[in-house]
Amino acid sequence: MIARPVIELTGICAGYGGPSVLQDVTLGVGAGEFLGLVGPNGGGKSTLLKVILGLLMPSRGRVRVLGAVPLRARRQVGYVPQYAEFARDFPISVCGVVLMGRLGQSPPLFGYRRCDRTIAMRSLREVGLVDLCERPIGELSGGQFQRVLIARALATEPEILLLDEPAANLDPRAERDLFGLLKSLNRRMTILVVTHDIAFVSEYVTRVACLNRELVCHTTEPLTAETIERLYGHPIRFVQHEGHG
Ligand SMILES: Nc1ncnc2c1ncn2[C@@H]1O[C@H](COP(=O)(O)OP(=O)(O)OP(=O)(O)O)[C@@H](O)[C@H]1O
Image 1: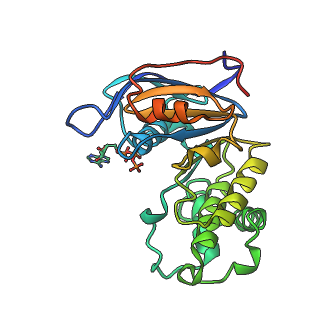
Image 2: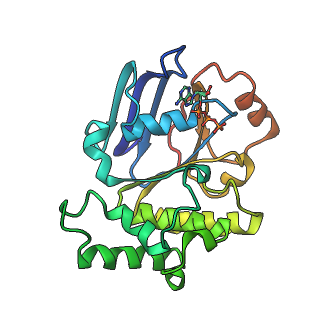
């Protein structure tokens, strides 16, 4: 039983016009959880994030984010897209990217306010990059850029943070640092992270959900080879555990 669900997906089917990518997915994420979403390529993880963000309407089922339809909750949800989705050659500074997280929070036509800049700097400080504020993003390492994207999401002052494969381009040390950062952010926000590193993620998260078009959920206690095989083999059933965390 989840105490205060902040994300509720019930019987979700969703896709892109052809056969449903998500098939009857039911998932609740509680306030303060740190959920790892794993699964094979093409299993529908990014599609699930799109449904939570309100970017993709499900053909069936019910979605609630912070008790509302996704578009209403959008300002309370920070999103870190897959690395490849952001053009690194775009001529913009680190601070410029982070300030983009304030778009939609400030009144339109008036530009950024002083408080937007304060929040952007605070977000950069939190990810340890305040010294690179004026640096063009094209001059950053992959790990630094990943942190900039997280700072941009933090600048929205979210209650929920969604990350799509944030560690995809990182070496093991940078990945560890990144998950350490997420763990500390989890003290004040709910986190859902899509990752392929199933063994690694279980050290950090409070629960793992595995998606292969349908969903298998279970607690994080050491993932055994048998569990992983079951998850990536034919997870054609839904397993719900209670009392996780
Ligand atoms: N915009 C789109 N239009 C049509 N089909 C799409 C679109 N985006 C994703 N798909 C298809 O939906 C399925 C699930 O894709 P999705 O990106 O959600 O999977 P994923 O689990 O995130 O995969 P990966 O681990 O490879 O990132 C795939 O078969 C993919 O080809």
